Each structure stands twice: as C-alpha cells, then as structure tokens.
Image 1 (cartoon, helix red, strand yellow):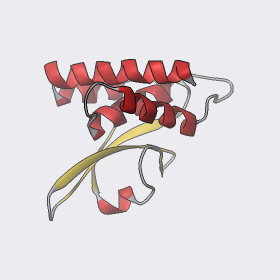
Image 2 (tube, rainbow, N blue to C red):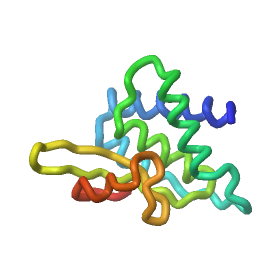
Image 3 (cartoon, rainbow, N blue to C red):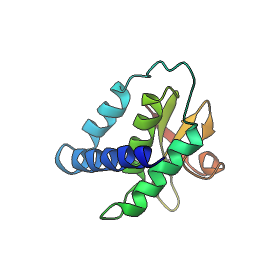
Length: 124
C-alpha cells in the first residue's frame, strides 16, 4: 500500500505541475493518451488504488483540486489494468463543475450519486 501512496503522491505532483504550467488542455490530453496496461490479475483493487490517492492527498503540501485528484486516479488505475474514465461534469444553477473517475460506469473516487447531480460534459 505504501508504494501506491508514493506513486499517487508523485502523480498528484505531476498533475499539479501540468495544471499550473501547461493548463487544462494538457492535463486532459495526458489522461486521454494514458493507455490501459494489460495486467493478468487486477491487483491491487480499484478501491485500494483510490484509497492510496486519497491518502496521498492528505500528505500533499497543498489542497488538491478534484480535477488533479481525478486525473491522477484515472492514470493510476489505467496503469494497473482498470479501464478508468475521468468524467467532467457541471450543474447550471448554481453553476458548479466537478471531476470524478468511473470504472465500468461505477463512480470510484467520489460518492456514487455524484453522476446524478452533474451533467456530463466530457469523458476521457
């Protein structure tokens, strides 16, 4: 588990750097281009990897935004053989946007009903 937390922390740092110096389009492209790695047995589980990201967020040196967290989660899950999609959604009144990760249509890194609150704008 500690290895996955370190990987997660480094992914958060990378995504933070991308957002700060390259912008949203670049982080979007990186997540989109991350290939699904073929793994014989899907170990660790998607829950373990999502928990590793959450723990890395606790140890991160600043507040982690949902886009950064979801991008890192999607990349980590794909590296371990899970077909993860980062989803970006918005609600109109009051306007609010949010990002989360789904695997096979199930929300992984947020509350299960989050997809009902937000209108999906993009999947990558």
